Amino acid sequence: MDVLPQENKEPMLVVKDLHVSFAVMAGKVEAVNGVSFSLEKGKILGIVGESGSGKSVTNYSILQILDKNGHIDSGSIRFEGKELIGMPEKELREIRGNRIAMIFQDPMSGLNPVYTIGNQLIEAIRTHDKKISKKQAFDASVEMLRKVGFNEPEKRMKQYPFELSGGMLQRAMIAMALVMKPDLLIADEPTTALDVTIQAQILDLLKDLQKEYGMGIIMITHDLGVIAQICDEVDVMYAGRIVERGTADEIFYHPAHEYTKGLLASVPTLEEKELNPIKGNPVNLLDLPKGCAFAPRCAKCMEICLKEYPDEIGVGPTHRVSCFEEVRKLTEEGIIDPMLPPQGKKPTKAPSPASKKFEKILTKGLETGKEEKNV
Image (cartoon, rainbow, N blue to C red; front, side, top):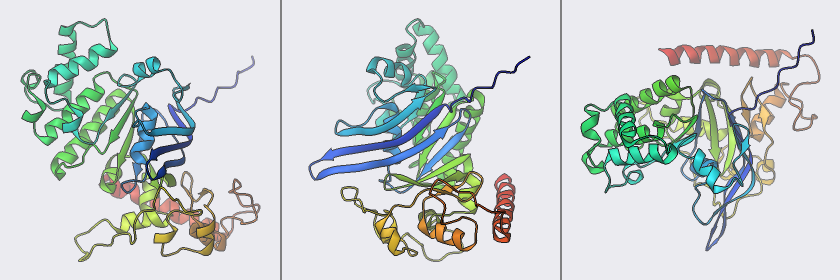
C-alpha cells in the first residue's frame, strides 16, 4: 500500500519580510525593516531590545492596530494559514481578542476607568459570542478572575480599575485577554512597573495558563530577566531588524551579536560597582545608515560594517546572527567558508577540528545552561 507523504504543516504564526513605517512631519520613520519570524503553537517567543527597536510596532502590525500615520509597506503575516495583511476589517474583528489576544503595557490605560472590571470582561465575551447570555458571561468572567489569582472574584467584578493595585490590574488585563481562550497571546511589557515579587507571580501565572490552554505567547520586553524565566526562543531586535535569534540558552550562554553582548553586559550584578551601559545613542530611524545600524556604537566595528548590512548566518543548531564580526571569527576558525554565497552556511569539506571544537563548546554550554536554568 502506498504511503502518502505527510504535509508540512505551517507554524501557527509566520511573519515574513515585514516593513512598517510612520509618516511624521520630519519625514518617514522606518520602524520595522524586513522582520521575519515564526511561532509554533504551545511555544513562547521573546522579543527583546531597547525602546524604539520596533518590538511593539511589529506585534501591533499582527493585530492591525497601528496608529493612523502607521502603514505596513510590504511583507506577509499569516495566522493559521490565513493572510492578515489586507484582510477585511470584519474578519479581523473575529480574530482580535478571540483568536489573538494582547496584554498592553499599561493596565491603567488599557482598562476603561468608568466601567467596572466585570462590565469590561462581560463585554469582551459577548462581543465575540453573540449567543451567550449575560449570566453565562458573568459566570465565565468570575471563573477567569479566580484562575488568574483574584480572591473574592464576585466582589472584584463590581470594582472599578482605580480600586485595584498594580498587580491586580495586570491580572485583570490577563483575565480579559484569556477569557476567550485565544490561540496566540501577545504580552507587551506585562511586568512593567511591578515589583519583583508581583513580577514573578505574573510570569508564573502566564506559564501555568500557557500550559493549560496550549497557546503560543509572544513576550515583548527589554527585561532580560523576564526572557530568561519564561521563553523558549528569543529574537533580539535593534533599529527595526532582528539581529540575532535562537533558543534562550543559545542567546544567554553564547551571544553572537555585539549588541546582544552589550545588553547582557549591561545587566547589573551585586559584584559590579559600576554600570556597564551600551555607549552611544540609538540610531535615528528617520535616517538609517547604509550598513549595520549598530556600527556607530560597536567597539568591534569594521569598515564593511558601515557600508553593507550583514547577511544572517547560522552559528549553532537554531542560532542565527547578522554580524560581520561573527563572520570574521568563524571564517578564521574554519567553521564557515567566505567563498560560499550568503545562503550557503555549510562547509564544502569535512568539519575541521576548529568546527568540532566549536560544536563541543556550544553543546556543553547549552547543557550547562539548562542545568543552571532548572536550579
